[in-house]
Length: 348
Image (spheres, rainbow, N blue to C red):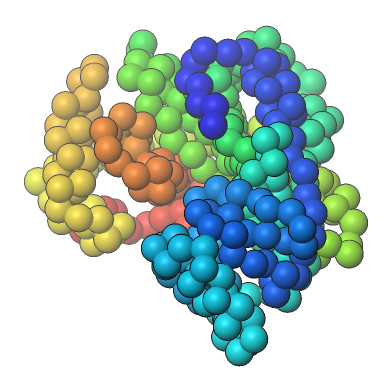
Protein backbone atom coordinates (compact mmCIF):
# COMPACT_ATOMS: atom_id res chain seq x y z
CA UNK A 1 0.00 0.00 0.00
CA UNK A 2 1.19 3.53 -0.80
CA UNK A 3 -0.23 6.62 0.89
CA UNK A 4 0.81 10.20 0.36
CA UNK A 5 -0.49 13.67 1.22
CA UNK A 6 0.97 16.84 -0.26
CA UNK A 7 4.27 15.13 -1.04
CA UNK A 8 4.16 14.78 -4.82
CA UNK A 9 3.19 16.60 -7.98
CA UNK A 10 0.06 15.66 -9.92
CA UNK A 11 2.00 14.38 -12.94
CA UNK A 12 4.22 12.24 -10.69
CA UNK A 13 1.11 10.89 -8.93
CA UNK A 14 -0.43 9.85 -12.25
CA UNK A 15 2.80 8.05 -13.17
CA UNK A 16 2.78 6.15 -9.88
CA UNK A 17 -0.88 5.23 -10.37
CA UNK A 18 -0.31 4.04 -13.95
CA UNK A 19 2.60 1.87 -12.85
CA UNK A 20 0.41 0.01 -10.33
CA UNK A 21 -0.73 -2.88 -12.48
CA UNK A 22 -2.01 -6.34 -11.56
CA UNK A 23 -2.47 -9.62 -13.39
CA UNK A 24 -5.62 -11.71 -13.81
CA UNK A 25 -6.54 -15.34 -14.25
CA UNK A 26 -9.84 -17.21 -14.14
CA UNK A 27 -10.94 -20.24 -12.18
CA UNK A 28 -14.19 -21.92 -11.21
CA UNK A 29 -15.36 -21.62 -7.62
CA UNK A 30 -15.35 -25.43 -7.36
CA UNK A 31 -11.67 -25.51 -8.34
CA UNK A 32 -10.60 -23.91 -5.05
CA UNK A 33 -9.09 -26.44 -2.66
CA UNK A 34 -7.95 -25.41 0.81
CA UNK A 35 -4.16 -25.50 1.18
CA UNK A 36 -3.62 -24.28 4.75
CA UNK A 37 -3.25 -20.79 6.19
CA UNK A 38 -4.87 -18.24 3.90
CA UNK A 39 -4.21 -20.17 0.74
CA UNK A 40 -6.04 -22.22 -1.88
CA UNK A 41 -4.76 -24.64 -4.48
CA UNK A 42 -6.06 -24.23 -8.01
CA UNK A 43 -4.97 -27.19 -10.07
CA UNK A 44 -1.36 -27.96 -9.11
CA UNK A 45 -0.54 -24.41 -7.96
CA UNK A 46 -0.94 -22.91 -4.49
CA UNK A 47 -1.94 -19.25 -4.13
CA UNK A 48 -1.70 -17.10 -1.04
CA UNK A 49 -4.72 -14.79 -0.61
CA UNK A 50 -4.80 -11.28 0.83
CA UNK A 51 -7.27 -10.76 3.73
CA UNK A 52 -9.79 -9.01 1.46
CA UNK A 53 -9.61 -11.71 -1.22
CA UNK A 54 -9.78 -14.43 1.45
CA UNK A 55 -12.92 -12.92 2.99
CA UNK A 56 -14.59 -12.74 -0.42
CA UNK A 57 -13.75 -16.35 -1.34
CA UNK A 58 -14.95 -17.67 2.03
CA UNK A 59 -18.08 -15.56 1.72
CA UNK A 60 -18.88 -17.15 -1.63
CA UNK A 61 -18.64 -20.56 0.06
CA UNK A 62 -20.83 -19.31 2.95
CA UNK A 63 -18.31 -20.11 5.67
CA UNK A 64 -16.72 -17.80 8.30
CA UNK A 65 -13.40 -16.43 7.09
CA UNK A 66 -11.52 -17.68 10.18
CA UNK A 67 -13.00 -21.20 10.22
CA UNK A 68 -10.60 -22.87 7.79
CA UNK A 69 -7.52 -21.39 9.48
CA UNK A 70 -8.73 -22.70 12.86
CA UNK A 71 -9.47 -26.16 11.51
CA UNK A 72 -6.15 -26.53 9.74
CA UNK A 73 -5.36 -27.97 6.34
CA UNK A 74 -6.79 -31.45 6.92
CA UNK A 75 -10.20 -30.67 8.38
CA UNK A 76 -10.44 -27.40 6.48
CA UNK A 77 -9.86 -29.23 3.23
CA UNK A 78 -12.67 -31.68 4.06
CA UNK A 79 -15.03 -28.79 4.82
CA UNK A 80 -14.33 -27.10 1.47
CA UNK A 81 -14.67 -30.43 -0.37
CA UNK A 82 -17.98 -31.06 1.39
CA UNK A 83 -19.26 -27.60 0.48
CA UNK A 84 -18.38 -28.10 -3.17
CA UNK A 85 -20.04 -31.51 -3.16
CA UNK A 86 -23.26 -30.32 -1.51
CA UNK A 87 -23.57 -27.14 -3.58
CA UNK A 88 -23.90 -25.06 -0.39
CA UNK A 89 -22.77 -21.52 -1.11
CA UNK A 90 -23.91 -17.92 -0.97
CA UNK A 91 -26.66 -16.93 -3.37
CA UNK A 92 -24.46 -14.25 -4.92
CA UNK A 93 -21.58 -16.67 -5.52
CA UNK A 94 -20.63 -16.88 -9.23
CA UNK A 95 -19.62 -20.12 -10.93
CA UNK A 96 -16.57 -18.52 -12.52
CA UNK A 97 -14.15 -16.26 -10.70
CA UNK A 98 -11.73 -13.61 -11.86
CA UNK A 99 -8.72 -13.53 -9.55
CA UNK A 100 -6.28 -10.64 -9.51
CA UNK A 101 -2.72 -11.05 -8.28
CA UNK A 102 0.08 -8.59 -7.45
CA UNK A 103 3.75 -8.66 -8.46
CA UNK A 104 4.48 -11.15 -5.65
CA UNK A 105 1.90 -13.61 -6.92
CA UNK A 106 -0.55 -13.03 -4.05
CA UNK A 107 -4.24 -13.03 -4.95
CA UNK A 108 -5.52 -9.59 -3.94
CA UNK A 109 -9.06 -9.70 -5.30
CA UNK A 110 -11.78 -12.21 -6.15
CA UNK A 111 -14.69 -11.10 -8.34
CA UNK A 112 -17.16 -12.50 -10.88
CA UNK A 113 -15.74 -12.87 -14.37
CA UNK A 114 -18.79 -11.09 -15.85
CA UNK A 115 -17.57 -7.66 -14.68
CA UNK A 116 -15.32 -5.64 -16.95
CA UNK A 117 -12.21 -4.13 -15.38
CA UNK A 118 -10.28 -1.02 -16.34
CA UNK A 119 -6.58 -0.96 -15.55
CA UNK A 120 -5.03 2.02 -13.82
CA UNK A 121 -3.06 2.72 -16.99
CA UNK A 122 -6.26 2.98 -19.05
CA UNK A 123 -7.86 5.34 -16.52
CA UNK A 124 -4.74 7.53 -16.36
CA UNK A 125 -4.80 7.78 -20.19
CA UNK A 126 -8.49 8.82 -20.04
CA UNK A 127 -7.67 11.48 -17.43
CA UNK A 128 -4.92 12.90 -19.62
CA UNK A 129 -7.14 12.83 -22.74
CA UNK A 130 -9.94 14.74 -20.99
CA UNK A 131 -7.75 17.30 -19.25
CA UNK A 132 -9.07 20.85 -19.88
CA UNK A 133 -6.73 23.07 -21.84
CA UNK A 134 -7.17 26.06 -19.54
CA UNK A 135 -5.95 24.14 -16.45
CA UNK A 136 -2.20 23.58 -16.23
CA UNK A 137 -1.20 20.41 -14.40
CA UNK A 138 1.80 22.34 -13.06
CA UNK A 139 -0.56 24.51 -10.96
CA UNK A 140 -2.17 21.50 -9.28
CA UNK A 141 -1.59 20.63 -5.65
CA UNK A 142 -2.26 17.05 -4.51
CA UNK A 143 -4.39 17.09 -1.36
CA UNK A 144 -4.64 13.32 -1.05
CA UNK A 145 -3.14 10.30 -2.79
CA UNK A 146 -4.03 6.75 -1.81
CA UNK A 147 -2.85 3.76 -3.84
CA UNK A 148 -3.22 0.05 -3.14
CA UNK A 149 -2.77 -2.98 -5.39
CA UNK A 150 -6.42 -2.84 -6.47
CA UNK A 151 -7.56 0.80 -6.25
CA UNK A 152 -6.54 4.42 -6.05
CA UNK A 153 -7.94 7.76 -4.95
CA UNK A 154 -6.42 11.10 -5.90
CA UNK A 155 -7.61 14.58 -4.93
CA UNK A 156 -6.12 17.75 -6.40
CA UNK A 157 -6.90 21.47 -6.63
CA UNK A 158 -5.59 24.54 -8.46
CA UNK A 159 -5.26 28.25 -7.76
CA UNK A 160 -6.48 28.91 -11.30
CA UNK A 161 -10.05 28.45 -10.05
CA UNK A 162 -10.69 30.37 -6.84
CA UNK A 163 -13.33 32.24 -4.86
CA UNK A 164 -12.93 34.52 -1.84
CA UNK A 165 -16.19 34.66 0.18
CA UNK A 166 -14.44 36.88 2.76
CA UNK A 167 -11.19 38.83 2.49
CA UNK A 168 -8.30 36.42 2.95
CA UNK A 169 -10.57 33.34 2.99
CA UNK A 170 -9.67 31.66 -0.31
CA UNK A 171 -11.28 28.53 -1.78
CA UNK A 172 -9.80 26.60 -4.70
CA UNK A 173 -11.49 24.24 -7.12
CA UNK A 174 -10.33 20.76 -8.09
CA UNK A 175 -11.39 17.14 -8.57
CA UNK A 176 -11.38 13.79 -6.78
CA UNK A 177 -11.06 10.52 -8.72
CA UNK A 178 -11.56 7.05 -7.22
CA UNK A 179 -11.09 3.85 -9.22
CA UNK A 180 -10.97 0.11 -8.58
CA UNK A 181 -9.08 -1.76 -11.26
CA UNK A 182 -10.61 -5.10 -10.21
CA UNK A 183 -14.16 -3.94 -10.95
CA UNK A 184 -15.48 -4.14 -7.38
CA UNK A 185 -16.84 -0.58 -7.57
CA UNK A 186 -17.46 1.87 -10.42
CA UNK A 187 -15.09 4.75 -11.11
CA UNK A 188 -16.14 7.95 -9.33
CA UNK A 189 -15.31 11.52 -10.40
CA UNK A 190 -16.24 14.32 -7.99
CA UNK A 191 -15.78 18.06 -7.90
CA UNK A 192 -13.55 19.13 -5.02
CA UNK A 193 -13.37 22.44 -3.14
CA UNK A 194 -10.44 23.30 -0.87
CA UNK A 195 -10.50 26.00 1.83
CA UNK A 196 -6.88 27.10 2.12
CA UNK A 197 -6.98 28.80 5.53
CA UNK A 198 -7.62 25.47 7.24
CA UNK A 199 -6.82 22.87 4.55
CA UNK A 200 -10.41 21.58 4.69
CA UNK A 201 -11.92 19.87 1.66
CA UNK A 202 -15.41 19.02 0.45
CA UNK A 203 -16.63 16.97 -2.51
CA UNK A 204 -19.63 17.29 -4.83
CA UNK A 205 -21.21 14.90 -7.30
CA UNK A 206 -20.96 15.81 -10.95
CA UNK A 207 -24.45 16.70 -12.19
CA UNK A 208 -25.58 16.58 -15.83
CA UNK A 209 -29.07 17.66 -16.94
CA UNK A 210 -30.59 17.14 -13.52
CA UNK A 211 -29.03 13.73 -12.93
CA UNK A 212 -25.78 12.62 -11.30
CA UNK A 213 -23.19 11.57 -13.86
CA UNK A 214 -21.90 8.04 -13.22
CA UNK A 215 -19.63 5.41 -14.69
CA UNK A 216 -21.66 2.23 -15.07
CA UNK A 217 -19.81 -1.07 -14.97
CA UNK A 218 -20.03 -3.01 -18.22
CA UNK A 219 -20.11 -6.76 -18.58
CA UNK A 220 -16.86 -8.36 -19.59
CA UNK A 221 -18.09 -9.31 -23.05
CA UNK A 222 -18.86 -5.66 -23.83
CA UNK A 223 -16.23 -3.12 -24.78
CA UNK A 224 -14.73 -1.09 -21.95
CA UNK A 225 -14.75 1.90 -24.29
CA UNK A 226 -18.08 3.12 -22.92
CA UNK A 227 -16.67 3.15 -19.39
CA UNK A 228 -13.62 5.14 -20.47
CA UNK A 229 -15.79 7.61 -22.38
CA UNK A 230 -17.98 8.07 -19.29
CA UNK A 231 -14.85 8.88 -17.23
CA UNK A 232 -13.73 11.46 -19.80
CA UNK A 233 -17.18 13.08 -19.82
CA UNK A 234 -17.34 13.23 -16.02
CA UNK A 235 -13.93 14.88 -15.85
CA UNK A 236 -15.00 17.51 -18.37
CA UNK A 237 -18.23 18.21 -16.46
CA UNK A 238 -16.42 18.29 -13.09
CA UNK A 239 -13.98 20.97 -14.24
CA UNK A 240 -16.70 22.89 -16.12
CA UNK A 241 -18.99 23.15 -13.09
CA UNK A 242 -16.39 24.40 -10.61
CA UNK A 243 -16.86 28.13 -11.24
CA UNK A 244 -20.58 27.88 -10.45
CA UNK A 245 -19.94 25.72 -7.40
CA UNK A 246 -17.37 28.16 -6.01
CA UNK A 247 -19.80 31.05 -6.51
CA UNK A 248 -22.51 29.05 -4.75
CA UNK A 249 -20.55 29.08 -1.50
CA UNK A 250 -20.75 32.88 -1.39
CA UNK A 251 -24.55 32.60 -1.23
CA UNK A 252 -24.29 30.89 2.16
CA UNK A 253 -23.10 34.10 3.79
CA UNK A 254 -26.55 35.62 3.17
CA UNK A 255 -28.36 32.96 5.26
CA UNK A 256 -28.13 32.95 9.03
CA UNK A 257 -28.11 29.70 11.00
CA UNK A 258 -29.04 29.08 14.63
CA UNK A 259 -26.08 27.29 16.23
CA UNK A 260 -28.11 26.30 19.32
CA UNK A 261 -30.23 23.93 17.22
CA UNK A 262 -27.32 22.58 15.24
CA UNK A 263 -26.47 19.24 16.98
CA UNK A 264 -30.02 17.89 16.90
CA UNK A 265 -30.53 19.13 13.36
CA UNK A 266 -27.34 17.39 12.25
CA UNK A 267 -28.38 14.12 13.86
CA UNK A 268 -31.76 14.20 12.11
CA UNK A 269 -30.27 15.19 8.78
CA UNK A 270 -27.50 12.60 8.50
CA UNK A 271 -28.29 10.04 11.22
CA UNK A 272 -24.95 10.57 12.93
CA UNK A 273 -24.19 9.79 16.56
CA UNK A 274 -24.19 12.36 19.35
CA UNK A 275 -20.40 12.43 19.69
CA UNK A 276 -19.86 13.29 16.03
CA UNK A 277 -22.71 15.83 16.07
CA UNK A 278 -21.10 17.49 19.09
CA UNK A 279 -17.72 17.55 17.31
CA UNK A 280 -19.28 19.27 14.30
CA UNK A 281 -21.07 21.74 16.58
CA UNK A 282 -17.79 22.56 18.29
CA UNK A 283 -16.12 23.15 14.93
CA UNK A 284 -19.07 25.39 14.03
CA UNK A 285 -18.34 27.52 17.13
CA UNK A 286 -14.59 27.80 16.46
CA UNK A 287 -13.90 28.94 12.92
CA UNK A 288 -10.24 29.61 12.03
CA UNK A 289 -10.98 33.24 11.16
CA UNK A 290 -14.25 34.36 12.74
CA UNK A 291 -17.80 33.05 12.95
CA UNK A 292 -20.23 34.50 10.47
CA UNK A 293 -23.34 33.03 12.17
CA UNK A 294 -24.42 31.82 8.72
CA UNK A 295 -24.63 28.61 6.72
CA UNK A 296 -21.05 29.28 5.63
CA UNK A 297 -19.91 28.24 9.11
CA UNK A 298 -21.71 24.91 8.74
CA UNK A 299 -19.90 23.80 5.57
CA UNK A 300 -16.61 24.80 7.17
CA UNK A 301 -17.44 22.74 10.27
CA UNK A 302 -18.51 19.70 8.25
CA UNK A 303 -15.44 19.83 6.02
CA UNK A 304 -13.10 20.34 9.00
CA UNK A 305 -14.38 17.21 10.75
CA UNK A 306 -14.35 15.26 7.48
CA UNK A 307 -10.74 16.24 6.79
CA UNK A 308 -9.15 16.35 10.23
CA UNK A 309 -11.18 14.26 12.71
CA UNK A 310 -8.86 11.69 14.34
CA UNK A 311 -10.07 8.10 14.16
CA UNK A 312 -13.02 8.79 11.86
CA UNK A 313 -13.57 5.86 9.48
CA UNK A 314 -12.88 6.64 5.78
CA UNK A 315 -16.50 6.04 4.78
CA UNK A 316 -17.68 8.63 7.33
CA UNK A 317 -15.01 11.06 6.17
CA UNK A 318 -16.34 10.70 2.63
CA UNK A 319 -19.93 11.00 3.82
CA UNK A 320 -19.30 14.27 5.69
CA UNK A 321 -17.16 15.67 2.88
CA UNK A 322 -19.99 15.01 0.42
CA UNK A 323 -22.55 16.41 2.88
CA UNK A 324 -20.57 19.66 3.10
CA UNK A 325 -20.27 19.84 -0.68
CA UNK A 326 -23.96 19.26 -1.31
CA UNK A 327 -25.07 21.73 1.36
CA UNK A 328 -22.76 24.35 -0.16
CA UNK A 329 -24.87 24.29 -3.34
CA UNK A 330 -28.33 24.41 -1.78
CA UNK A 331 -29.19 27.92 -3.06
CA UNK A 332 -27.79 27.64 -6.58
CA UNK A 333 -27.92 23.98 -7.58
CA UNK A 334 -31.28 22.28 -7.15
CA UNK A 335 -30.99 18.65 -8.19
CA UNK A 336 -33.05 16.16 -6.15
CA UNK A 337 -31.41 13.26 -8.01
CA UNK A 338 -27.92 13.99 -6.71
CA UNK A 339 -28.95 14.98 -3.21
CA UNK A 340 -28.77 18.77 -2.98
CA UNK A 341 -30.98 20.42 -0.37
CA UNK A 342 -32.79 23.26 -2.05
CA UNK A 343 -35.11 24.64 0.62
CA UNK A 344 -35.04 22.99 4.06
CA UNK A 345 -32.67 24.45 6.66
CA UNK A 346 -30.68 22.20 9.00
CA UNK A 347 -31.82 24.18 12.05
CA UNK A 348 -35.51 23.72 11.37
